[in-house]
Length: 75
Ligand SMILES: [Zn+2]
Image (cartoon, rainbow, N blue to C red; front, side, top):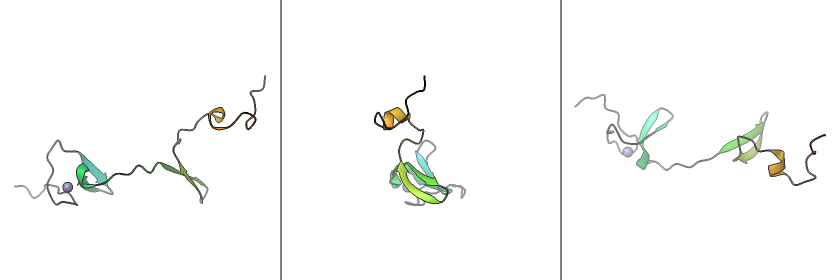
C-alpha cells in the first residue's frame, strides 16, 4: 500500500476515489466526518463589523425598503 494515501484528519481512514471530501485549511476530511454550517457573508465598513448578510449579491432597494424609504426614479 502506498504511503502517499491521504487520510481523513478525523477518522484516519483513507479515501476512495469517488468519496465526497471536504477541504479545510489544506486538510482533507470525509464529507460525512465533518459538520458543515453555512455562515453566509459578513459585512464590514473598513474595519467596523456590521453583521451577517444573506443577500451578498445585493438586492434592489425597492425589494428591501418600503415605499418612501427610497428615491423614486427621476422622470
Ligand atoms: Zn473520515
